[in-house]
Length: 367
Image 1 (cartoon, rainbow, N blue to C red):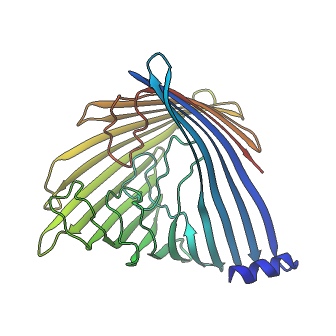
Image 2 (image 1 turned 90 degrees about the horizontal axis):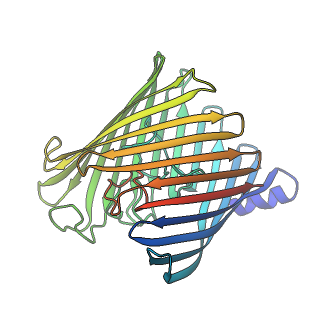
Image 3 (image 1 turned 135 degrees about the vertical axis):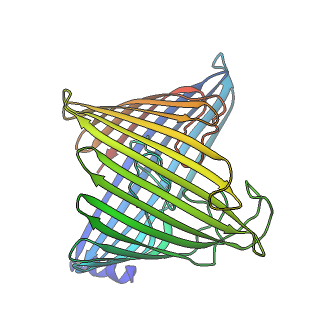
């Protein structure tokens, strides 16, 4: 179908657009040892449209150089890698209140900003100025009602790499499926989300036993309201079968608030707190606590300052990030510094970051 659509577009019967993003990144970390990395990335994107049908095809090409050395900055080891892979490849049918999309696509939802229990299918890092994430092979259908309520339904297959919070890979060729119901409130919205998959337990991870081809069910609830400050809640409960009648449960709950203060150009503050627990029952097991704070301040129309602090109360680790960003119509420049523990142990999905202290520089050009 994509081939037919492309032929019609090239014949002048539809819409055709070729765009892309070229970016470069360099990062240097120094604690007791030195580590550095520099890379170039190019993501060309072909967008096609014909009436209610449209498609997007893009690839992710990366060339990177990595080096390690001692504290005196003498390089002891270096590597150079080149890789390319599909980034997006989907076909969509759109109507007034309905949308169906199939292929390699980004699938993200939820109310939280920094610590996201509903980060099931993406790995967007809130510190990444480009907001990049790998897609998933999925079919997604969405329907919107007149009152802005909407229903989602999806199925996934062919995804073997752990995604989101997953620590155990999915059984690649057994379909995953789920859905989401989102309802409007007087000053916000509330949603219930479900997902089922078969996981491929090739290693035990944090699970107490090794059992192949077992299933996992996830249930999520999130809500967001604007009552002056923005308030939200996002929580999930995950049940993994372990054979027989036994199961392993994981739970996460995040509460958050944000507000823009009338100071200068507007000082934005976002605070989220995440609780984690796991055990043989939905409310059993040790609980971890993570708090994250984001502060953002615009310096005119082009420049913005951001700082993120994450505290893991269980390990007593503190992760710090501060950056300056300048954005033009086509160009983006970002300079950031980070100060993290030498051996990061932050929970997966919280964007704990690289080890040690360092500086990262990013530049991107969009055409």
